Image (cartoon, rainbow, N blue to C red; front, side, top):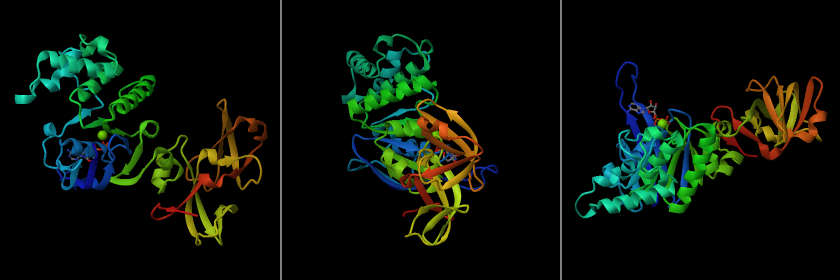
Length: 364
Ligand code: ADP
Ligand code: MG
């Protein structure tokens, strides 16, 4: 099912002295979610991710704008008639019900011609449970399950009615690191095998990168970039996106353009003949530094961290906006890093420049 959001806006009115101004939680969201894709909705806490999801599910009404499922305008449809499956961060299972009863719960209230027999419900629950590989746990209570298993029950419950759209709101946040990895693979597998259009909300860039077909990067209720994961990383539209993606984070410097050359401090780092003179922010990915030929940037060496395949060279620079400059370099180069200074070359495709005032990318 294709989902289209048109100029979707949600403003929460002011409520009390603590929140004297209305909050624009979602501001003029417009984008199409292609049928069968997994969209990662990525942004810092409080940027409006859950609000977007709740608008799509129908739990919240938009202040303005429209939502389409396929060709149908569902903006005024109540949640139960939208055919969405919802999974939240805290599994929200019924503690007194077995796994099977938790999964069949959304089926129990179907009325009229949709009413199901117990056998039909059990069969559907079993199919959903198999999909998330908990079919051997059907008679347990939630308290007898691990966090990962509980979250799978919640996913099975969301899938049991064959939703047109699956909405996942930070579903992995309560799991430990290993389970998080495993469960995200699982979600990807289930999404592929069912083909259900899925929106996966997370504040974790690595999580979004690893499972999404498309990432929507948002901040303060607004979309900054919609792109394939690799493009969001390789080709950020602004400084916010460049800084939000990547670990270790991108290195940002105060720089300036003078007569077609990009300067950091008094060193010319790159030739960029098409860019007019002025002050800019220069961002360099950690893997964008080299140690071999043509050094262009001299930093004060702090330390070298050995990570096996790579080394992390930690340094400082007067023009750096981050406390340290971090370069990730092939460990073959380990012996050439010593003394108090380190001289880096740069890979031009890993260097981005941005307007000081707006943060917008300046292409060269
Ligand atoms: P996220 O899920 O990205 O952390 P939310 O969508 O929950 O962000 O919240 C976006 C903004 O809207 C926040 O500033 C939050 O405080 C505000 N907000 C969310 N729900 C309500 C509400 N029911 N009433 C007032 N403000 C709200
Ligand atoms: Mg949220």
